[in-house]
Image 1: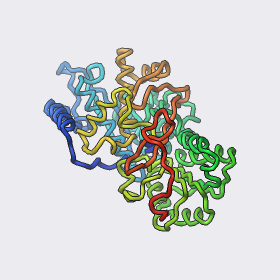
Image 2 (image 1 turned 90 degrees about the vertical axis):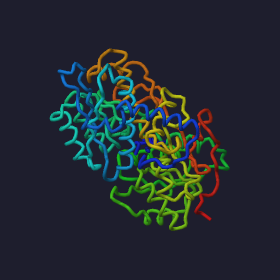
Image 3 (image 1 turned 45 degrees about the horizontal axis):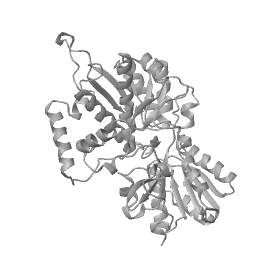
Image 4 (image 1 turned 60 degrees about the horizontal axis):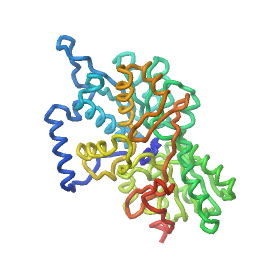
Length: 436
């Protein structure tokens, strides 16, 4: 989740493009020096691709641990797919710098699924049956995770996946699947509903609109929030599921504006979230409150896609933050900014979610002395496991048992604002920038 949940499903949810920015202080300089030392040792990120040579049997080195991954490097989910790629590659670089997993160098075999459910099936079948990878990690989005996880199940592979947490994922009841975010994506909007219902009656919206992408990750979030807010007396004046191929959402915004909702809760991925905000700006209409389940929780790409002057006041949900005190987070942030540039606040949570998949493999290997699919599946279903995403545990269907955080754009930054015990700022209620 990206600070999406990724949910960043991710959807995430949640990153996307190459991080920008070149300013560095003394601390950043030290991080770059450390990264240079790793590169000098032959452990640069480029060494983690599928083209990296495996140690030969005659060399006496232990065989590489090859992990197959299908990612959306092109197509609708390519921004998020590239963020997942950065997270996976950064973990491989980091673990290889420490000697690998049980002495085995990690090699990532990453292939492009073009954001296609058909291609993702072909990719995982080939990775498992032709490339004979040792393990697999998941793609981006529930749309691709559902068919991909079925392939993994068929061949007895554990399926650690960073960004596929829609209801359709868990309704499969796959014991080999582990969603590496705090909770199922359908619960991502619960924290926004909790916030709205915590407001004094005089500050609550009275009417709401619920546009949503036709996507197994996005639309259930809007539906879940609608159910809760309707039960609390907030009247629904508009709801619409728009097709995945829609690129211009002006007609959706025009129809919403005619109903004059106080609140818009949109079940979005990335591209449609951008399109929704751009249509609002173009039509010079804004609700009093705007929540986007994904897209707006992308600190790297959201401002550039909707205009940096249009972000303040928009709400979303998050699962990871650069200031979190979770296991290994400070080292991850330092390594990420050294490798990819930019500020810590521009790291998309999809990268942290992907990195956390690798953390889990390391932890199971350290505990059991083994790194195989059966061991991963049986071991992860016991106890709680520390990751960048927090301490994770799962039910029998692979859904994690924690919760998301409400985030809002304030002063050009994406900040946690609710609940209070996890907030870095109080929520700001006021006109959206383009509303005049």
